[in-house]
Image 1 (tube, helix red, strand yellow):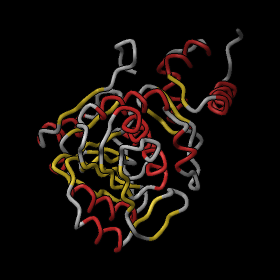
Image 2: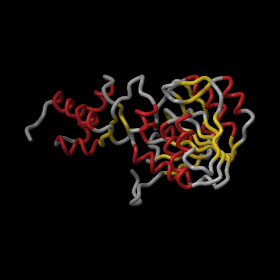
Image 3: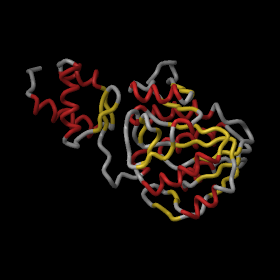
Length: 263
Protein backbone atom coordinates (compact mmCIF):
# COMPACT_ATOMS: atom_id res chain seq x y z
CA UNK A 1 0.00 0.00 0.00
CA UNK A 2 1.32 3.44 -0.90
CA UNK A 3 2.21 5.59 2.07
CA UNK A 4 -0.73 7.80 3.02
CA UNK A 5 -0.53 11.45 3.93
CA UNK A 6 -1.58 12.49 7.43
CA UNK A 7 -4.89 13.83 6.12
CA UNK A 8 -5.64 10.60 4.25
CA UNK A 9 -4.66 8.54 7.26
CA UNK A 10 -6.93 10.48 9.59
CA UNK A 11 -9.80 10.26 7.13
CA UNK A 12 -9.43 6.49 7.17
CA UNK A 13 -9.48 6.47 10.97
CA UNK A 14 -12.73 8.45 11.00
CA UNK A 15 -14.20 6.18 8.34
CA UNK A 16 -13.28 3.12 10.39
CA UNK A 17 -15.06 4.56 13.44
CA UNK A 18 -18.15 5.13 11.34
CA UNK A 19 -18.21 1.40 10.66
CA UNK A 20 -17.40 0.24 14.19
CA UNK A 21 -17.82 2.15 17.49
CA UNK A 22 -14.33 1.41 18.83
CA UNK A 23 -10.92 0.52 17.44
CA UNK A 24 -7.54 -0.31 18.89
CA UNK A 25 -4.42 1.71 18.08
CA UNK A 26 -2.41 -1.44 17.34
CA UNK A 27 -4.96 -2.50 14.73
CA UNK A 28 -4.86 0.95 13.13
CA UNK A 29 -1.07 0.94 13.03
CA UNK A 30 -1.07 -2.48 11.39
CA UNK A 31 -3.72 -1.68 8.78
CA UNK A 32 -2.24 1.74 7.91
CA UNK A 33 1.35 0.46 8.04
CA UNK A 34 2.66 3.15 10.39
CA UNK A 35 4.05 3.14 13.91
CA UNK A 36 1.84 3.21 17.01
CA UNK A 37 3.49 6.54 17.86
CA UNK A 38 2.20 8.01 14.57
CA UNK A 39 -1.27 6.68 15.32
CA UNK A 40 -1.13 8.13 18.83
CA UNK A 41 -0.38 11.59 17.38
CA UNK A 42 -3.22 11.18 14.87
CA UNK A 43 -5.66 10.24 17.61
CA UNK A 44 -4.58 13.16 19.79
CA UNK A 45 -5.12 15.57 16.92
CA UNK A 46 -8.51 14.10 15.99
CA UNK A 47 -9.63 14.24 19.62
CA UNK A 48 -8.58 17.91 19.89
CA UNK A 49 -10.93 18.61 16.97
CA UNK A 50 -13.77 16.73 18.66
CA UNK A 51 -13.86 14.09 15.93
CA UNK A 52 -13.13 11.07 18.15
CA UNK A 53 -12.84 10.09 21.80
CA UNK A 54 -9.51 8.71 22.96
CA UNK A 55 -9.66 5.51 25.00
CA UNK A 56 -7.03 3.41 26.70
CA UNK A 57 -5.33 1.67 23.80
CA UNK A 58 -7.35 3.21 21.01
CA UNK A 59 -10.32 5.40 20.15
CA UNK A 60 -14.11 5.39 20.11
CA UNK A 61 -16.77 7.08 18.08
CA UNK A 62 -17.66 10.43 19.70
CA UNK A 63 -21.01 10.62 21.41
CA UNK A 64 -23.20 13.51 20.44
CA UNK A 65 -24.47 15.74 23.29
CA UNK A 66 -27.88 14.20 22.61
CA UNK A 67 -26.60 10.64 22.71
CA UNK A 68 -28.99 8.68 24.89
CA UNK A 69 -28.65 5.53 26.94
CA UNK A 70 -29.73 3.39 23.99
CA UNK A 71 -26.90 4.73 21.82
CA UNK A 72 -24.30 4.35 24.57
CA UNK A 73 -25.43 0.83 25.33
CA UNK A 74 -24.14 -0.26 21.91
CA UNK A 75 -20.56 0.71 22.76
CA UNK A 76 -18.01 -1.61 24.43
CA UNK A 77 -20.59 -4.38 24.52
CA UNK A 78 -18.17 -7.24 25.14
CA UNK A 79 -16.28 -5.29 27.78
CA UNK A 80 -19.47 -4.35 29.60
CA UNK A 81 -20.82 -7.88 29.48
CA UNK A 82 -17.61 -9.08 31.12
CA UNK A 83 -17.87 -6.34 33.73
CA UNK A 84 -21.47 -7.36 34.41
CA UNK A 85 -20.46 -10.98 34.92
CA UNK A 86 -17.88 -9.98 37.53
CA UNK A 87 -20.14 -7.50 39.31
CA UNK A 88 -22.88 -10.11 39.62
CA UNK A 89 -20.57 -12.35 41.67
CA UNK A 90 -20.88 -9.93 44.59
CA UNK A 91 -24.67 -10.19 44.71
CA UNK A 92 -26.34 -12.96 46.72
CA UNK A 93 -29.76 -14.45 46.15
CA UNK A 94 -32.27 -12.55 48.28
CA UNK A 95 -30.27 -9.33 48.50
CA UNK A 96 -31.68 -5.82 48.38
CA UNK A 97 -29.89 -3.99 45.55
CA UNK A 98 -29.97 -0.41 44.34
CA UNK A 99 -29.05 -0.12 40.66
CA UNK A 100 -28.53 3.41 39.38
CA UNK A 101 -29.30 4.11 35.73
CA UNK A 102 -26.59 4.02 33.08
CA UNK A 103 -25.51 1.89 30.13
CA UNK A 104 -23.07 -0.34 32.04
CA UNK A 105 -25.50 -0.78 34.93
CA UNK A 106 -28.06 -1.95 32.39
CA UNK A 107 -25.73 -4.78 31.37
CA UNK A 108 -25.42 -5.73 35.05
CA UNK A 109 -29.21 -5.74 35.36
CA UNK A 110 -29.47 -8.23 32.48
CA UNK A 111 -26.96 -10.54 34.11
CA UNK A 112 -28.73 -10.33 37.48
CA UNK A 113 -32.06 -11.18 35.84
CA UNK A 114 -30.46 -14.23 34.24
CA UNK A 115 -28.58 -15.55 37.27
CA UNK A 116 -30.15 -14.41 40.55
CA UNK A 117 -33.47 -14.94 42.30
CA UNK A 118 -35.54 -13.38 45.08
CA UNK A 119 -33.86 -9.99 44.86
CA UNK A 120 -35.47 -6.67 45.69
CA UNK A 121 -34.12 -4.16 43.17
CA UNK A 122 -34.61 -0.44 43.75
CA UNK A 123 -33.82 1.69 40.71
CA UNK A 124 -34.18 5.15 39.22
CA UNK A 125 -34.03 3.64 35.71
CA UNK A 126 -36.99 2.49 33.64
CA UNK A 127 -34.60 0.59 31.36
CA UNK A 128 -33.18 -1.34 34.34
CA UNK A 129 -36.68 -2.01 35.70
CA UNK A 130 -37.84 -3.47 32.38
CA UNK A 131 -34.83 -5.79 32.16
CA UNK A 132 -35.06 -6.95 35.79
CA UNK A 133 -38.80 -7.56 35.51
CA UNK A 134 -38.18 -10.41 33.07
CA UNK A 135 -37.29 -12.51 36.14
CA UNK A 136 -40.54 -13.18 38.02
CA UNK A 137 -38.72 -13.91 41.30
CA UNK A 138 -37.23 -10.40 41.45
CA UNK A 139 -39.27 -7.52 42.88
CA UNK A 140 -38.70 -4.09 41.37
CA UNK A 141 -39.27 -0.83 43.22
CA UNK A 142 -39.16 2.31 41.06
CA UNK A 143 -38.04 5.58 42.58
CA UNK A 144 -40.34 8.58 42.13
CA UNK A 145 -39.03 11.78 40.58
CA UNK A 146 -38.67 13.98 37.53
CA UNK A 147 -38.28 11.98 34.32
CA UNK A 148 -35.23 12.40 32.08
CA UNK A 149 -36.18 10.93 28.66
CA UNK A 150 -32.62 10.86 27.34
CA UNK A 151 -31.45 8.67 30.22
CA UNK A 152 -34.83 6.99 30.86
CA UNK A 153 -34.41 7.64 34.56
CA UNK A 154 -35.81 9.86 37.31
CA UNK A 155 -33.99 12.39 39.47
CA UNK A 156 -34.57 15.25 41.88
CA UNK A 157 -35.82 15.96 45.40
CA UNK A 158 -38.55 13.30 45.35
CA UNK A 159 -36.03 10.67 44.26
CA UNK A 160 -33.57 11.64 46.96
CA UNK A 161 -36.25 11.74 49.68
CA UNK A 162 -37.39 8.26 48.69
CA UNK A 163 -33.85 6.86 48.71
CA UNK A 164 -33.24 8.19 52.22
CA UNK A 165 -35.80 5.62 53.43
CA UNK A 166 -34.09 2.70 51.65
CA UNK A 167 -31.13 0.63 52.75
CA UNK A 168 -29.54 -2.03 50.53
CA UNK A 169 -26.96 -4.78 50.75
CA UNK A 170 -25.31 -3.26 47.72
CA UNK A 171 -25.38 -0.29 45.39
CA UNK A 172 -24.36 -0.88 41.76
CA UNK A 173 -23.65 2.32 39.90
CA UNK A 174 -22.06 3.49 36.66
CA UNK A 175 -20.16 6.67 35.95
CA UNK A 176 -19.21 9.12 33.22
CA UNK A 177 -15.62 9.34 34.43
CA UNK A 178 -13.06 8.14 36.96
CA UNK A 179 -10.31 10.42 38.23
CA UNK A 180 -8.27 11.05 41.37
CA UNK A 181 -11.12 13.09 42.86
CA UNK A 182 -13.68 10.30 42.57
CA UNK A 183 -16.45 9.29 40.19
CA UNK A 184 -18.36 11.70 37.98
CA UNK A 185 -21.65 12.27 36.18
CA UNK A 186 -22.10 14.21 32.94
CA UNK A 187 -25.45 15.48 34.24
CA UNK A 188 -25.44 17.62 37.39
CA UNK A 189 -29.02 16.81 38.42
CA UNK A 190 -28.57 13.07 37.97
CA UNK A 191 -25.22 13.29 39.76
CA UNK A 192 -26.94 14.88 42.75
CA UNK A 193 -29.28 11.89 42.91
CA UNK A 194 -26.31 9.51 42.63
CA UNK A 195 -24.71 11.25 45.61
CA UNK A 196 -27.71 10.09 47.64
CA UNK A 197 -27.65 6.60 46.08
CA UNK A 198 -24.13 5.71 47.21
CA UNK A 199 -24.97 6.41 50.85
CA UNK A 200 -27.72 3.78 50.88
CA UNK A 201 -25.76 0.53 50.63
CA UNK A 202 -23.49 -1.60 52.81
CA UNK A 203 -21.26 -1.91 49.75
CA UNK A 204 -20.90 0.29 46.67
CA UNK A 205 -19.73 -1.29 43.42
CA UNK A 206 -18.79 1.07 40.58
CA UNK A 207 -18.97 -0.50 37.11
CA UNK A 208 -17.02 1.30 34.38
CA UNK A 209 -15.27 0.33 31.16
CA UNK A 210 -11.76 1.55 30.33
CA UNK A 211 -12.98 4.59 28.36
CA UNK A 212 -13.98 6.19 31.70
CA UNK A 213 -10.48 6.01 33.18
CA UNK A 214 -8.88 9.39 33.91
CA UNK A 215 -11.97 11.20 32.57
CA UNK A 216 -13.69 14.16 34.21
CA UNK A 217 -17.34 15.18 33.98
CA UNK A 218 -19.37 18.08 35.34
CA UNK A 219 -20.28 16.59 38.73
CA UNK A 220 -17.99 14.53 40.98
CA UNK A 221 -20.70 12.84 43.01
CA UNK A 222 -18.60 10.47 45.14
CA UNK A 223 -15.08 10.30 46.53
CA UNK A 224 -13.10 7.07 46.51
CA UNK A 225 -13.51 6.76 50.28
CA UNK A 226 -17.21 6.07 49.65
CA UNK A 227 -16.58 3.22 47.19
CA UNK A 228 -16.10 -0.47 48.06
CA UNK A 229 -14.93 -1.77 44.69
CA UNK A 230 -14.37 -0.85 41.07
CA UNK A 231 -15.19 -3.44 38.41
CA UNK A 232 -13.61 -2.57 35.07
CA UNK A 233 -12.23 -4.31 31.99
CA UNK A 234 -8.66 -2.98 32.10
CA UNK A 235 -6.42 -1.97 35.02
CA UNK A 236 -6.35 1.78 35.71
CA UNK A 237 -3.21 3.30 34.18
CA UNK A 238 -3.31 6.91 35.44
CA UNK A 239 -0.84 7.26 38.31
CA UNK A 240 -2.88 9.83 40.25
CA UNK A 241 -6.00 7.71 39.91
CA UNK A 242 -4.13 4.59 41.04
CA UNK A 243 -2.81 6.49 44.06
CA UNK A 244 -6.29 7.68 45.06
CA UNK A 245 -7.76 4.19 44.70
CA UNK A 246 -4.99 2.64 46.80
CA UNK A 247 -5.26 5.32 49.48
CA UNK A 248 -8.99 4.66 49.83
CA UNK A 249 -8.40 0.87 49.81
CA UNK A 250 -10.86 0.32 47.01
CA UNK A 251 -10.91 -3.22 45.63
CA UNK A 252 -10.21 -3.26 41.89
CA UNK A 253 -11.67 -6.19 39.94
CA UNK A 254 -10.51 -6.52 36.33
CA UNK A 255 -13.02 -8.48 34.25
CA UNK A 256 -11.68 -11.07 31.85
CA UNK A 257 -13.26 -12.40 28.70
CA UNK A 258 -14.51 -15.93 28.24
CA UNK A 259 -11.01 -17.12 27.32
CA UNK A 260 -9.46 -15.76 30.50
CA UNK A 261 -7.84 -12.71 28.91
CA UNK A 262 -8.22 -9.05 29.75
CA UNK A 263 -10.21 -7.18 27.07
